[in-house]
Length: 115
Image (cartoon, rainbow, N blue to C red; front, side, top):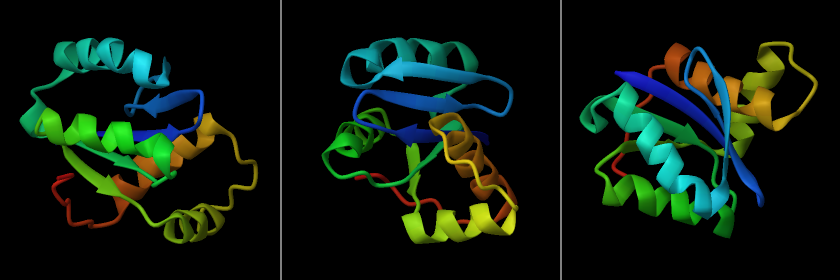
């Protein structure tokens, strides 16, 4: 499996793939994001982890469903508690993407279809 943590905000997607921190402009950046992913991994081996952020995360959820990408949508309270357990205080989009990546890698999560 190839894991990616994404922090979704109004203006962009902050992405961490285990090695690199990346940014993609929300809806407009999905084409670039898809190109990046195609170079890295077969979509059937990909798991994307993110928090629901209202309307801002809907297009990412739809993107995952449309491309048959497994998605795990984390309850924000769980990721907040996980962040505290790691001793992290500073909340930035970059750190949040890394935390969501670690959350999925370290905790046995059941991946649900994004549909």
